[in-house]
Image (cartoon, one colour):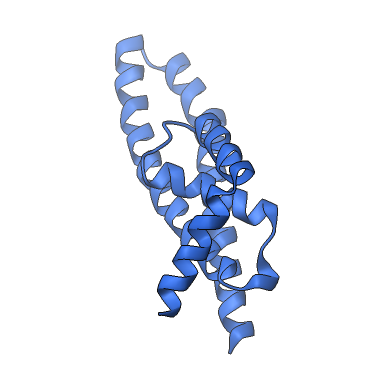
Length: 132
């Protein structure tokens, strides 16, 4: 059963990351440049781009939620913990919680949290609470 659960959450984690990165890459390559080149005014292009970015932002929040959920399942298992997994969880959690305005800020905050031991402390409290 544990193997099935881990496989499901591994899939969910990768789906979230893939859709998130894919959406950003698609927007940058296939949407932004053609819209600004093809539409008659920059104002119209900006309005259309803002609508697309809003929808991508919603997708990012859903994907980040998938990542956080999967990471929490893995972090509850001592053998699944690694610095990279903890870092991904903290970055995604900061973005979902609105504590970081962008990826650069989230990475900086995550690094500080991990290096100070705050992330490990919060994880231990979460595990203790969920086991109670």
